[in-house]
Length: 392
Length: 234
Image (tube, rainbow over all chains, first blue to last red; front, side):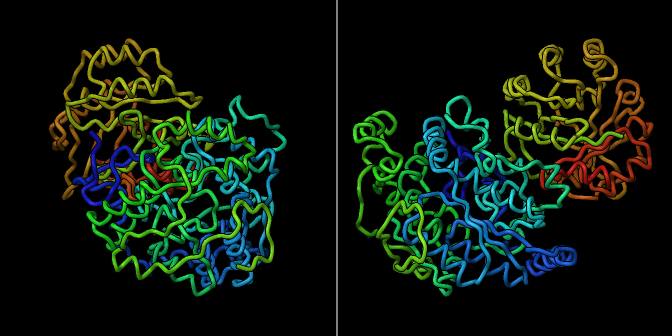
């Protein structure tokens, strides 16, 4: 029988693995560090690091990789507060809604920062998604592979010494490291955490019909070269007390637009995606046995905004909401009969969760969460491949 | 002097240990070994943190190690308490064996058997220790407790072990906090000593200056890119 954390919703079947101390999971006991850490001292450590970089650097001080959701707004605002001159780097995942495109352009214009958007070869990208879906029940691996390597390539090519990420998910979710470790982004952590143990070789294997020459930016740069150019990837959540829901609510002041979400109360994280809370959420459920809502509720339990009992009720509600998977398969170029076949064979036992669900959630949220959630907008266009100057 | 790394393996999965008290999940053994090779790590010690007699995961860990692909020399230990265990390891890509309890309990028969099977150079003794009020205590894994250093026959360890890993349990997971005074308190020649637990750049310089055999960096080795080079260049 799975060992359950006495505080949160996770148990020891979590895909990132968990350890326990007095029946408290590593995610929870690591979260508790946040209340002991001298965050002012941590911020000063970061300022010292920045000072040493600014002393020698003549180009951009750092790269901030973004997808354009609320956390990116918060990260960019912190980076600017620290006096850094960032280059914003984004990879087109081709899954953005009109809201997603609006948010990324608004981020660049509101903060008045330079940016670079990479549009990967669409046919190669789609072939990798087909392979990833077939092999790992995962559609975001090709994007995550690029999102975690392309910014590092740019930093390396342009000799930009620092890459600043927002939260270290493996610390925030499961406590893989202590905040005191100040764990940095590495080739190893990218494979182990960001890509769930699957590097490009495993992704392609002998399944994907792609050419090596098309995969340059999917491969992580040579670490000797990164070392030569002194490129370092850090996570802001190691230096600031990270509270995503509160932070994400705070970025509404910059014009960030939340998106409706029938799979969670969180309208900020990955807002602007056509798939994250749709087919991706269903595949996650199939792969690991729970949906994104469980991560969100665990986070809120730890931040003291919801009790475990309240969380269990919300988990039950959101875990049974329907997801619309058809638009994704149409985007991928699958025929109607192909979609039917896929549902019949690959989503056996999950058919009840497939369908359209346009009704807003009716379940009541605890006040401490409700006060951080506003009425979001619904996208009028999904799977918008390219978009500029979006008005919403 | 060699600069190596320590990985903790339990039930097919790697962990990080902090101050001998807290375990954190780390990841797959192969992924960690792959990157340590790229970091040009001189050796990798895979230690199973077995802290009592009840060891149900030995076979699973043997399977994990059997599937390991590595060009870096591997030391393996933790819960090696029978000749049957030694036989199982003989076919695996393991260069050295790490023993703890057999040295504390003076299990001559097992150590001699291991020597015969793997060679003298392959035998390492692991002495996890803590310093308390200027007294040294050694962890006795099979009993899951610390015992005073005086209860241990160091000359026996010196005789049977080719190298001795002095592992600072109190500072495990920290940086530059290895309890260096231990070298003055245990009578083992420096050239046979490997230090681990709280290793930082300063400790590596200390080890070089004192002609130690090796250092084994634990958690910190995977916290920054290309860490070993940084440590080696100190």
